[in-house]
Length: 131
Image (cartoon, rainbow, N blue to C red; front, side, top):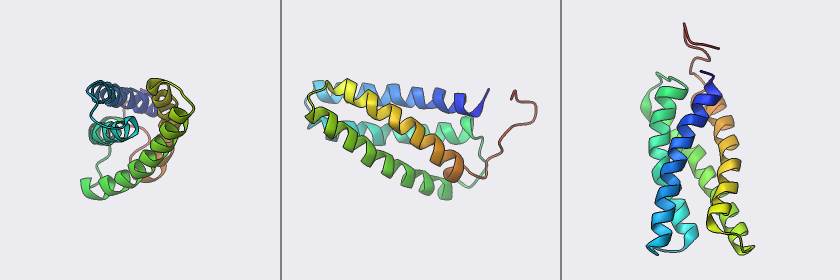
């Protein structure tokens, strides 16, 4: 399976988890929607890191250095997520539409940075793997 497709699959699972947390948080009125969105993004990122490291990039790099780079990538992604949510919520859009727009933007941001910096030392292709 292509690396980008594996990335999208893992990211999709993490996104489902993030959206579930977002919906529960909003419906339970746990705080401002933008704060709940950020918290859901951060929590789902832990699963995303571990699965992306193991399945998408099949990295054998030490966990600590890769996680620190990943945390930097996620931090910037969180800022982007918050900006998109804030702007689109202020425009009167439904919070799930806002989150959808943020998710698409962040998908491409994360793949670009993960493949070129976070897991840059990971093999591009596994022996016996389909191209």
